[in-house]
Amino acid sequence: MNIALRIFLVVGAVIVFAMVIRKIRKSEMQASDSVFWLLFAGSFVLIALIPQIAFVVSDWLGFDSPSNFVFLFVIAILFIKAFTLSADVARLRQKVVALTQEIALREKR
Image (cartoon, rainbow, N blue to C red):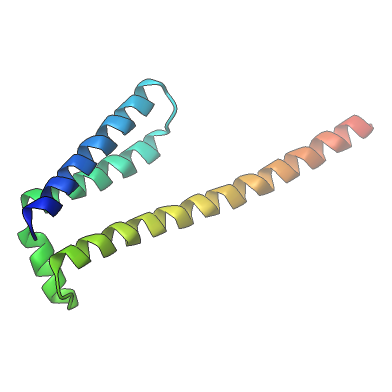
């Protein structure tokens, strides 16, 4: 893994840390979301500081290059986050429908 990718990972992690801390200070982010993003950024730092992790895992999974593993790792984690957010939106949508129906019934009485 070349130095440019390692620097990119650290800079990306610093940007994510700064954004999360800013959102926490403004009370615009829930604790569970902030923990996810901090761990996500922490994984960037870990891979950048200990690149052997990427080498070992990429060899184990059969990737040609550790950088391919890093990009797939990022894509996979963000895909999982998008799926959980989609499930949360669907759950909240159902709650809105139920609450709207309940309010309509109360107003009808």
